Structures are given as C-alpha cells and as structure tokens.
Amino acid sequence: MQAKRLISVIIPVYNHFEELTFALQSLAEQEYRPLEIIVVDDGSENGIEKYIQQGELWGITMESQHNSIPLTLLKQKNSGAAAARNQGFQKAKGEYIIFWDADIVGKPNMLVDMAQLLDEHLDMSFVYSNFYFGNKKMPAQAFDKDILKERNYIAIATLLRKKDFPGFDESLKRFQDWDLWLTLCESGKKGIWIDAYLYRAFVRKKGISSWLPRFSYRKPFCYLPGIRKRVQEYTYFKQKILSKHGLDGA
Image (cartoon, rainbow, N blue to C red; front, side, top):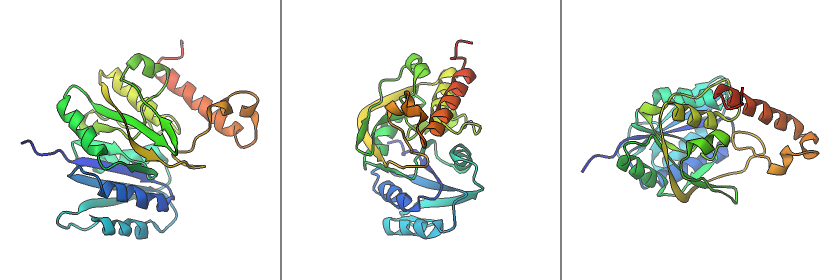
C-alpha cells in the first residue's frame, strides 16, 4: 500500500487567537495522518504563544514528539493574508497543501476525503467542497472554468498539489482565492468537487471571513455608513481581477 502523502496545513492569523484553538482542535481530530501545521502570525498583538501551547492538549506540539502533529510558528509584519499564506507555503514540506483559516472547523473526515480524491485523480490539481458559513449553507458546484470566469464558487480551504501552486498575488486585498483558481485554469489545471459540507467557517465582523449580505451591494444600501467603503473596495478589486485575467471585455 502506498504511504499517505504529507499534508501541510497553512494557517494565517491576525489576532482572533481564541478561534485558532478551535481550528487546531479540529485538525487534531482529523482522521488523516500525516499532517504538519504552519501558523503564520501576520503582525498580531503579542500573546499567540499561549494559544499555540494549548494545542499540546490535542497532540500538536512545536517540539518533536512521537505521534504528535508538528507545528511551526512563523511571524511577519502585518502584510495581509496573501503574504502570510505565501510565507507559510515556503516552509511547507507536504506534497499536498491546504490553506486553513483560523476560523475554520473541519469535520474529522475532511482531509481524508479530499486526499483520497487527489490520490485517485492524478489529472486534478485541487479538490474542494461545500461548507457552512456560520449557519448558512455555501454550496459549490462541479468544476467549470467558464463559470469560474464569471464568479468564484471555490473557497480557500481547498486541498492542492504543492507542485501546482503558483502563489498568491499579494497586491490583492480581496479575491485572492478567485485569482488563484483563475491562474491555475490558465495554466491548464483543473479541480474536482466533493458534494458534501466538510467544514464550517465562523462569521466575523472583520477579518478574513468578514461578509456582507447580497442586498448590501445594491442601491440604496451600498451607500450606508459602514457599508459604503467595503462595497467600494469589493467593486475595485473585482474589477482588478477581471482586468488581470482579460475578463472585462477590454
């Protein structure tokens, strides 16, 4: 039987340390082994170490121990999630990688199901699933590059072959994941969908998983205080993605 490939789990963190403990616990409960965890602190306030140390309760350690999941903590000046993920990737040793935000809790079978599909489908570069955003269902769909050019239906918590990963565009404050999938498509790479809800992302008011309901982008709601700036940023970076990938009709 072929040995399981190492999966490198890369977690960018900017404060929100309490959420990180739940993410680490869900990784410790994964049915898949072997794993390595790389946490990248993106210029947070001091104090992350004590939360990392709680991982020892579940067999996650920064020291080499038998049967433990090794954890590496990296630190950088606040440069954004894309830069943090890229730094984590540089240290990754696994054949497979997954970018696992600090607010994600995965089902125990999440990684084993994803890895099995990549093992079986050698022509695929990544595998993704449905998920819950808070209590809201976020369904994906079968891989279709033409639909992907219109909208993103693939979330960041996707298992990738390390050799196919091109890096995140650090100039983008939004849509880094959409940009990644479009870049992979342009180089002929494909993904495969698991039609199952394999993880849950917590809702944040700010941060990586902040979210506005669809009506917020329509008039007159898009002009409301507290929403207007975020809608403008959304529109700006969406147009930047479309222009970068030649999808704006220019």
